[in-house]
Length: 554
Image 1 (cartoon, rainbow, N blue to C red):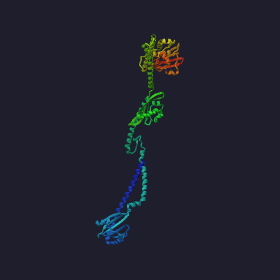
Image 2 (cartoon, rainbow, N blue to C red):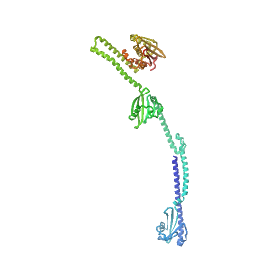
Image 3 (cartoon, rainbow, N blue to C red):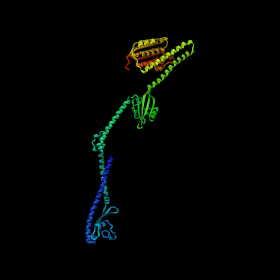
Image 4 (spheres, helix red, strand yellow):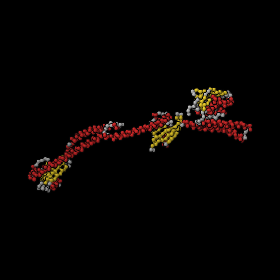
């Protein structure tokens, strides 16, 4: 801006100087022409009076170096000329000033030399005898005057240019200085040119508008950050180049990264080729989904393209933890397969025995044996169905009536029911201790029944089953200990799974459904308790169940 102001001022100053020089030169030249024209007329009148009186003798006596007199006949011939021999002069009738004098009595004109550096003024007067007396004088033109004064003009021009340069520089600095010190953050507090007031008011209004928009954007940003920070799902925003624009805490935990990843390519966070391919497909097709495993968890990744006015802005990556759903789905599939298998086995046995009886393909004495087999397999089916129903109720969290349950009395009832089974293997059973808990009597009975039933089934002949009940820290503790075959260490973590059997052949012989310990686990969970298992092969198994004496508010 300073240079523009300087150039404008400098050019204006030089232009004014040149125009002034031309005007002065022209005015002076015109003034001097007028003065000289008047002097010529005065001289001509004097010469005309003397010529009419004395004739050529007067003209011959004149010795002026400035003026030239020419006496011309009415026919245009030159009678006498003070500078040139008349014999060499042509007829002057065609001269403008002569023609005008012939007509009006006086005439004047001016003519320039071929180089335009000299100008001749002519004045003519008609005498009484009809002849014309003409006087002329030559002087330099304004062009020659300027050329003659060229050195002085150049000096003046240089001085004026330097002065203009200094003044223009100072003026430009003075003009720009207030602009350079403008406080645009506080435009209304500036003390500067009055002409800038509308601009400063406009800037002030724009500041207020921008501040308002910034506050609104910040509020929306904070709101957005608060929302995504509370999300359990992982959220990652990518631009069209695959650079991370935003990432919430859940996504940071999934991809094991920090805030430093913002502004970096997503490949620096996850180098999975399948995820990179999914992002590229989403940018092309608009949406893509896949499942990945990270940190021992399974996630469903949904990737959607974001657009604005048909322009691709990037992608939104949303990660859902589907570990439980996937596990439940696998358990459901496994449960369905196991139930189908468990139901099919006794049914096939029942159908086979019934067909043999129906078709009379057995000896009469074998009929009771097949009938017993049908009854046995039917009872097995009923037990299996009962266990499945019980697990379904526990899975659904069905509300059941709760009461104060005396654990020693409940355990004694269970052992009474299992007395015959224990007697077949000569197994001794004991109950000791005291405790009362708040729970569902029927479920707790079934829990103890399954624990004690397993302790008998997988015990050795002449073994022992001990039920020890106690209370500590406002919790009831039930310990079922046997002297059975024990459970291999590598299988102990799976014994509470549905249909899982450590010794499948032995379990089949014992008529178990493989759901007993799974029911025990669900009963304990229903009562918000804990269960622990300790077992050694050939020594026995101890299962400890801890239940709250008073169930917390659900």
